[in-house]
Image (cartoon, rainbow, N blue to C red; front, side, top):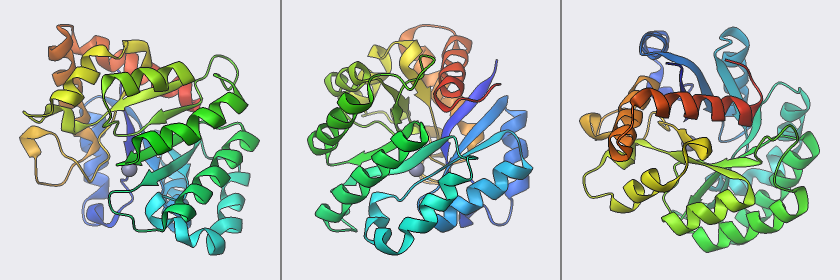
Length: 264
Ligand SMILES: [Zn+2]
C-alpha cells in the first residue's frame, strides 16, 4: 500500500534534532513520497535542497499569505526558484483572514501574482485558505476559468491543503478542477464538518496530508505532527467510509502523484 503525505514542512526547525529519524519513520510506515511545502524563499530553498538529496521528497514553493507583505523583496528570488524547473507545484499560497499577518489587499496581490506564476510554469497550486472561504474561492474560480480545468494529461489544477470548508464548498472546488486534501484534524471528535467532507469527496479527488509539524491527529493531539502519522488519518477516513484503508491510501497516493507529475 503506497502512502503519500501530500503536504508537510519537514525542513522546519521543529525537526532540527531528529529529521533523519523522522523521515525513516515515515518510510517505515509505508510512505513512498512526501510533498514538502515552502512558505517563503528560504524555506522553498530548503525544500529543494532536501528534494535533491532525497528523491522521495518533492518540493513546492510559494509565499504563504502570512508572508505576503514580503512579496516586493522576494518576488525575483521566488521566480528564480521556480525557473530551476525542479519544483512540482506553487504553494502554499492563498488568503488567511484569521491571523491577518499581512494586509488583505497585499494577500490578494500575492495570491494573484503566484497564480499567474503557476500558469506560466504549467504547475499546480497548493492553496491555504483560512477564514476566507468566499474570497479565496472567488479568486480561484476566476483563475480556473482562465486556465481551464486541467493542466494537460488530465492533471488537476491544484489542491486545497488542510481543507476546512463544508461539503458544498468542497464540491464547488472539485467542479473547478481542484483536489481536496484531508488533514489530521478530521480525527478530532467534534469535527463533524471535516468528517462530512471526508465521507463525501470521491476517492479520485481526495488527498491525505499531515501539515507536519502542525495539526497532529487525535492520538498525538497537541504534540508535534510528522508524516508517518498520515496513516492514522487515512485509517480514520477509511472507517468513516466503511472501506479498506488501502483503498484510501492507494487513491490518495495516485492522486498526489498525478497532480504533481511524479511517479511512485
Ligand atoms: Zn502547510
